[in-house]
Image 1 (cartoon, one colour):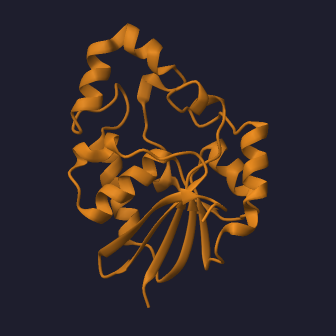
Image 2 (cartoon, one colour):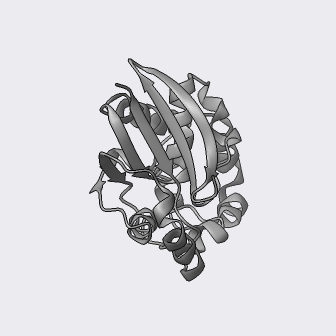
Image 3 (cartoon, one colour):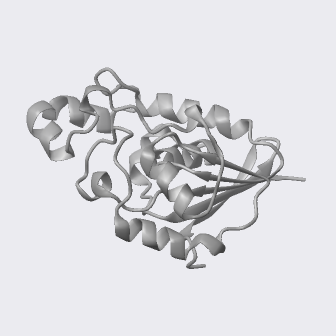
Length: 189
């Protein structure tokens, strides 16, 4: 039997709309929650459900009718002192550091994680996914990190992977060999 993993990105909310570094507390907005409720029956039955610890993933899971374990290893990329700040604000105040962080997968956000670190953390979790189907409601950067790891992509590809709100990305495999079904709208086929 193989492992089947459905990674669901959270519904839209203020932090995503405003291009803010996520601080874990911003939720989904009413429209995002309504879209998630409408898509609730579209997800496949799962042996287990995992949820990223951030509020918008927990709220999206609830709106989808999913109850699952919160998994610390599925936390969003830690942006350190940039948490909660708008991308434009950080760019204006710390443009050089932001540019280096976006360009160099080894360079951590000040007081936070590098892209390589989040890819390694999510990769370790991915290799521990048991057989059967798992649905995980996770931040877009967790989806990116899982795809980078699953396909053996260079970590520099991380920022080139777009993950739209409320989409599902499916991975299946066994013995460390993963196949990818590219993201699709939850409930949209």
